[in-house]
Amino acid sequence: MSSRRSSSRGNISEDEINELISKLQALLPSSRRRGSGQASTTKLLKETCSYIKSLHREVDDLSDRLSDLMSTMDHNSPGAEIIRSILRS
Amino acid sequence: MASTSSSTPAAEVEERGRKRKRAAGAAEPAAPAQPSKWRTRREHEIYSSKLLEAIRLVRAGPSSSASGAAAPAPPRGWAVREAADRALAVAARGRTHWSRAILASRRRRLQAAHRARPRAPASPSSRHDAAAASASAASASAAAKGTATPPLARKAKVLGRLVPGCRKLSFPTLLAETTDYIAALQMQVRAMTALAEALSAVSATSSSFSPP
Image (cartoon, rainbow over all chains, first blue to last red; front, side, top):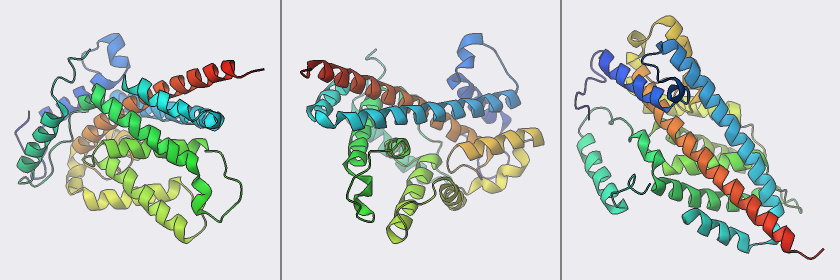
């Protein structure tokens, strides 16, 4: 893709930074709604921070939920096999 | 939907091996793998089975190596979170800073737990270790000064604290790491949600079968 290796020697070209930023923006949920061209970088970073925090929270909630489910699942050990087959399909 | 992962896994591995040989000559390792790899069905499956194994290990007894208490405690939420993060870092195949930092901090915490008390504080030690790991891994940290204006640098610092092991990276590297980390987190959420749904469906079914 980008064969220019100007990384550790001199300044990184602004084009590469903009390319990275647009890739990041494509992942954020807000970019799908607005279809905005160029948000300011500061706002983008702030949104990225809050998005990562919300993802962390979601993973924490899911972890709690999974740990509760795991403790109640002790009774049926074939359940794990079923789940693996479900995940594979 | 199957068109996303058209190349066979063997071809993918081969391609990555070729890329790695090419990148071995460069001073700095190439940019981390495309974040779109976290969207492939194959990665999802790999992570799901790793996650299941990790959760099983958690369930088998986190206190088994501890002071020998008689009653095994049920898996706490944070234990599941640790296992999930570790599985995610392993799935990244060690080519990103954040995945290496997660694995390094976890290994150090386990070693500390074996020597001293089993309950070691999670966040301060992991942050400290993450900083040490990133300082040794990132060679481009010297270029950090000239690439970001001050208000941007503040936000970049906050971002660097959020992504594990990325506090001292240069701005472009930080952006690349963040992109990969977000894509990986999204896959983690998808996989854990699917697992939770499946588990609750199973336990609901089994409870309806049990005689009153």
